[in-house]
Length: 563
Image (tube, rainbow, N blue to C red; front, side):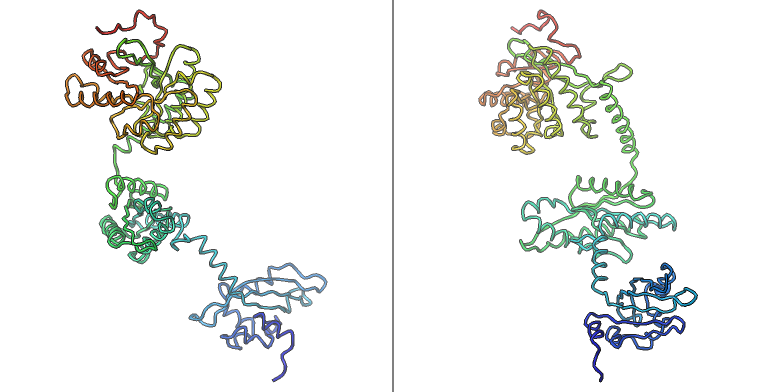
């Protein structure tokens, strides 16, 4: 056997082979190591351009096209080219990915006549490219489609079902209380739960169904050719598969459930955005009703009408803010014994174009639901500070909604207003609801401390309607509790309400916390409250909120103290 030339030895070690291709005869001459590079391909298949092209994927003409599309040859110099393609000995054989680099040389007519080059096996690079492509399309934790490609598949499925006049369904499957798993065991265990839930769903899919990870704890599922009955049956199959067996993790078994919201397409969702929104809506409803349940979206006339109202009211609130039609009304809070004004509660009003005014109960719940409450609260804060700055003798209180309590923009606003008007903070009482006070005691304590640094006082509004303990009140450093008017309004007629309110006042007095009784309707109730030691009262008996500045009213109009 002749010695292998050094050049061919180098090529062989690199998994490469050289060739010369005569285009006139279509014959290809290979270096001796070609058989080692193309180990599973017969020599006859390598002998000519035509035969070799039969092995090439995806385009058999890729080599001739590379020559014809390259720039013309100049002064007899070779023209370089580079292409990539796959070759396969048979339909059942694996693809060998090839990188071909070479030059062609022109004949007398200027067209390619001879090609010489090198081919190199490039399976590793192709595998890396394939892996990168997979990662761009799939979620790395579960291996399922990622959100982008899931939504693209949903859009295609809706278009297909519309065109073929069939029915399908889109589901959002949400793992219930995953944050508890995070808190109890750590994020790595939560990831194991997510991966196992994905595996269980995948095991219960039909052929043709499309599955992907929609977000952290949610999966999206496209069920093709699926009726309403099919959707119900499938949902129960998925829910049972998730809940019936605990999930084994490195920290021990974890029991999980999932909830499902679904919508039929294209009947109830004509595009991907609509399908996602409605599936989200039904998933949220299912979770609120009961964890581990299923809900299918159905048209709801009242819901759609309410949404139209929400859109209109949102526009009205924003317009009123821009046009400075959000104003304040002031309700007196008086000392229970002397009936002299102690401070005034600053309540929001929205002046309408017809001259009528919407009251706080009409504005605040809608603004909270639509995410506009922080803007409303900020405007009321501006109005309150302006009044305090203009009237050095008045004290005002204002309500802050739960959404505003931890809003950094609100803090920026109040700090700048307080610095612009020194001393104003000492005459401001900020009322927070009882629900805010129990959300996160440490965060709320920070909120209270910052306000107290300005000299402001803190009141808990609607006390008794929630679950705030007196221990938490002391921990927060609350100055005032406002007893929920629902308990106060009937104390003259209800023994239970009398006992409850009397107990609250007594406990507050022991903690040296001032008390305000809301919704005081009659003199009999006012006398009871005074005798029990309640500090302040407000309500219909004293006077309801008015846009007028009560502190400008002559003192002789103030209600006299009861005998």
